[in-house]
Image 1 (spheres, rainbow, N blue to C red):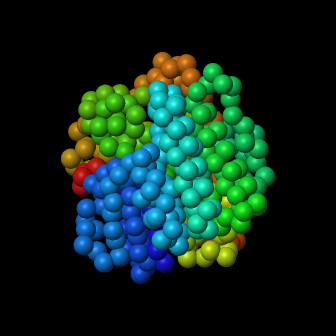
Image 2 (image 1 turned 60 degrees about the vertical axis):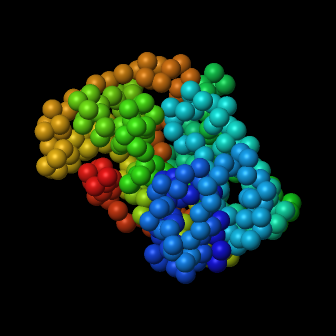
Image 3 (image 1 turned 90 degrees about the horizontal axis):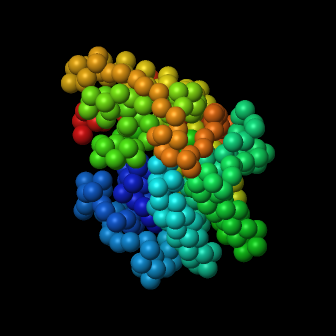
Length: 336
């Protein structure tokens, strides 16, 4: 199988490539602005990398799509801080550029496996979120945070429409708060654009207090990246069982509040010799969302996925419990 991965250097892309090259004989054609996370695969017989910009490389991408069996457009913005500070960039990359690629896949009759997001559920009233049942509810226009959710939801609908009208073979997958090595960098955290666990580790090591937005009462179902990659490999290997489907990929057993996550991070860091002193001095503070993010922020209080659909179709279930997932993620900063 020939697989084209756009946004290959990112968190999901780099881990997926690792899973493919270590566990299959599939060939990977990777594309991104940078290949820093992929340098160890230089010279691998089943790996090729092209450096370029998704905004300007239309000719290259059209040829690459035509030569592929499956396409994963993983380039995108997935950081809440950017939804507010750079909403147009979020829309242009996550919607406009990905729509361009999906149209290429439809024209070339190529299978697309598209990264939706748990964010599409927004402030759904359902306690457990189901792919084909739960309502997708977002806030008012003044809450710019929802531009990401709306763009992704529209991509989901357009892809499904291409499937219905033009026979596009597709699978949509919705990651629920995947964590692990290469999630974010400390540079992101220094700019306060990192996601929660990276921001917490950086703040502790920098002597800053961990800031809990609105008290950190929001709950998320944290999923270790290796579990997510196992799900993507199963989707790639089983086209018939996954075609035309939407799959939540998360760990409902790892549901915890951001406040609980902060204290877990501190406890684990106290057990790591090089982090112990900073963790023993760690402090936690509370800040209103408007002060931390600005007036355009909004949030959902809980996100628990139903994983019944992917379990029935592909036999997948997550394996890594919360403490182990968080510990592995923190240890990657020691090793890095």
